[in-house]
Image (cartoon, rainbow, N blue to C red; front, side):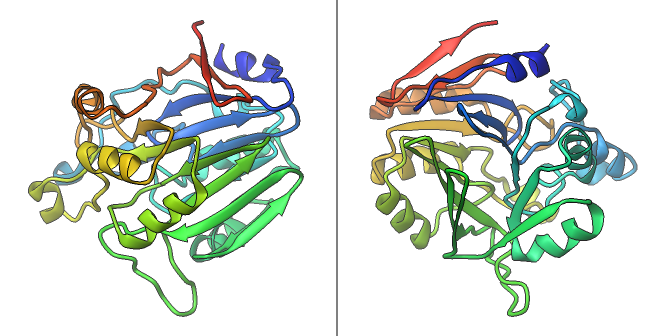
Length: 281
């Protein structure tokens, strides 16, 4: 059902239709382009950790759409190599239906994608600018506990400013607060910011899990940098690493932050004036 909804959606000029597909995955569609961001639409992570009780990932959310059902996709944007953000199986499925699709990823990941996928790959690193066909992307390093930069491959984790159909959006990927991020957000003035809220715990840190913004950090970052609408994500996918989104809602209401809590399978429309309209299916 979701595949046909996305395929049949017809945004007007100046509109962006968008859908949450779980974890940090989103689909953006304008009158001329369709972009998929960090899609995880398989069970590869569950299978990979099945025998590792200390880090076993158990799905809480159904697979909303088979990758092959995502049609007319022009670009896939990947923030980093962790399996819930770059899933080889999901990307292969999307590319099988969209052979002309371009994948955009960090320099650190681009060579791997070229080896695994038969597609065009755009490589980005911290501070780089790229534009094509009305899509503009500016990248900034993300800090996923650490920057983990290597001289030969650059920064492995990226966040993105996405300029599309006269709108500016921000996609954090996975990150914790760090000064360059705050400066970057303040400079781009995004209408919408997709922010992870699953945070971290001492137990998960000891197990080797990388941290993300907590719901409080996401709210404070959005307020401090004048984000117009915050959209929390990266929760309710795996039992081992989630957050109660109601805590985000309560604190955002208390502090006066404008936000949208996305619901999977529903359609949202960012209109030309910055208002978000919701279509319930």
